[in-house]
Length: 231
Image 1 (cartoon, rainbow, N blue to C red):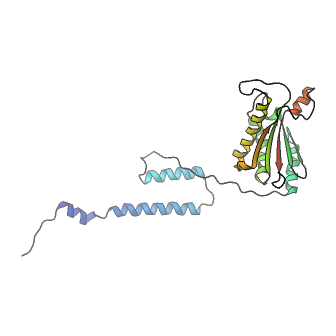
Image 2 (cartoon, one colour; image 1 turned 180 degrees about the vertical axis):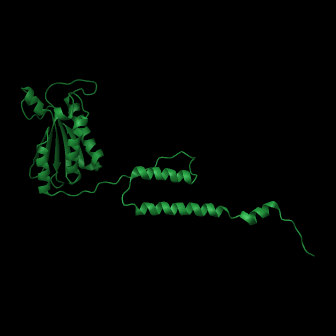
Image 3 (tube, helix red, strand yellow; image 1 turned 90 degrees about the vertical axis):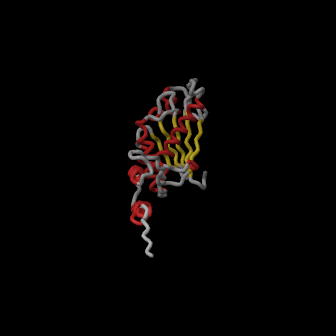
């Protein structure tokens, strides 16, 4: 006797399209494979494009609602240190020496770069003048391409200062040194372990504070680069 059962609608759907989810899964795997192949074949990473591409990929996969993106953490490439020779450093220092507001000298064991207070800071202020940043960029190139330790020193004249931000010249000189240090670390993406900062206030003048010219020379930031074996 032949059984003539009727197939339920559910069983018919299973036989006709029960494995249709595999198509979506295969598409997902293909997209992921293409994404990682792109990462491996990129010669240089453009972080902005990578963030945008990642957001679009997430939206396309249905991870986020259309039009919404999430923050993507991308590690910025660290600059490789190309060690400059002593001759290259000397040539670079000679160029800096003729830059307005900068005095540079290369001794046997260290490099000393002195920045004129009037070029880099407003009176009684620790923020770096934007017009002085190109000079700091040139100095940053030296730091980036050497393995020297870097000490940033702040100095003032003996004119007293007493504000809510800076109760004395000690705080002002220290804040200026730290701001220069932080700019180098941020701009050159250099490891902070290579840096130190010190504020000497009026305690280490180059000249007696007996004239406006001498006082101007005493207001300065000094960047000292010392080889590792000497520091």
